[in-house]
Image: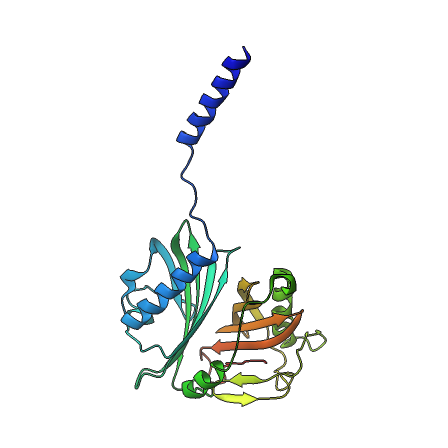
Length: 269
C-alpha cells in the first residue's frame, strides 16, 4: 500500500508538472542588462523592431501616448554617452542617453518595464535645444565624471531607504520642513550648468511633484523617478544613495511644457 501510494503521488506530481502553466521568464540583472543594451542599440540604429516588445506595449513620449514606430526611437541617433540601472524587483530599467549629433542633439531618459520576458511599458522623456540650460556637451562632460560603481553588498541600503531619500528631495519642493538626507560635499548639474559645493540651494517652493514611478537599483544605490513636475511637466530625477545619504549624483530631465518650465539635469557628488 505504501509503495502504491508513493507511485501514485509521483504520477500525480509529474502530471501536475506537465499540465502547469509555462514558467515565467526570470528577471535578473543579466536579463535587464541585455534589454537596456538592446534599447541603446535600437536608438542608435533607429530600428524599433530589434526590441523584444509585446504586441500591446504601452509607449509614451513626454508622457503622451505614442507608438514605437513614430517616436524618437525610430530616428537614428549617434549615442555619445549612456548609463543604465536595473530593478530586478519590478523587472524594470532606467537608461539615460546623450547625443551630440549635429542638428539632433538630445538628452533622453527612458524607463522600461518587462512582463514575461517582453517589453510591456516604455516611458521616454526627450529633451533638446530650447530646453532649460540645454547643453549636452557639458552634460556629457560632467556626467562622464561620475563613478557609479557597485556598492558592496554589506553596505547597500534597502529599497525603502533609497526611495525615501529621493522622495524627500522631491517633497522639499512643496514642503520646506522636509528633512532631506543631503550628502556632503554636493555638486549639481542643471542642463549644462554645474553648481557646487551644496545641492541645497535654489530649490523652488510651492511645487507638487506627483504621479511618481520608480526604478530602484540597490546594487548601484540608485532610484530614478518619473513624475509630473508641478502636476503637469514630464520630469525625471535620478539619485544615488550611500549609507542613507544623497551622495553620488542626482540627475533630472524636464521636458518643457510651460514657458516657465525648466530642464533640470542635476548631479550630486
